[in-house]
Length: 148
Image 1 (tube, rainbow, N blue to C red):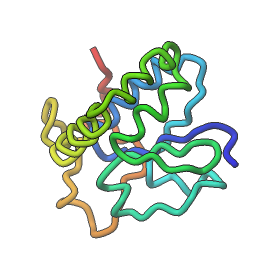
Image 2: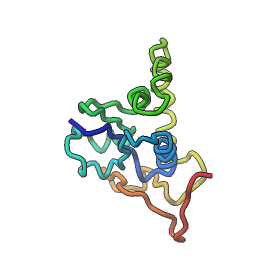
Image 3: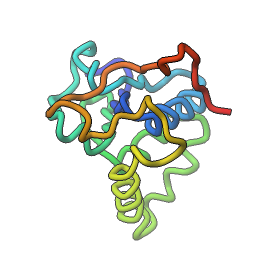
Image 4: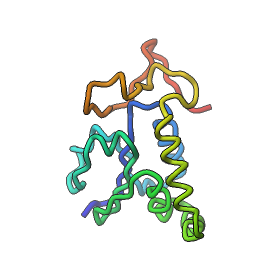
């Protein structure tokens, strides 16, 4: 069992980091641990997840160890977020979850090209095989990029 749910994400992707920062702002009670996928060994109790699976999608891990990859992560994490319980019923409407999964897959496949070009975002092809980014990197000029 985990003390709280964990969201594993691609820290080598600027688009992913931006959305994780937004999620962290929404999670003002700190109920979800957002963790770069490459640092997952720091948390005991996480189920095994392959690097390939983590490269394809974020994974939300419930405290009981259940995995919710990609588009399935959104309704799974909503109960932990302020106001999220009100949004979760949308996912029982026929077609909403399959549409969410398709949209997530489309975005995930193109995430390295979305948003402003950034040296922080490493396309999968530029990484060694099986590599998962582990920590947030700052621009080489020493400045910090934050959301506007």
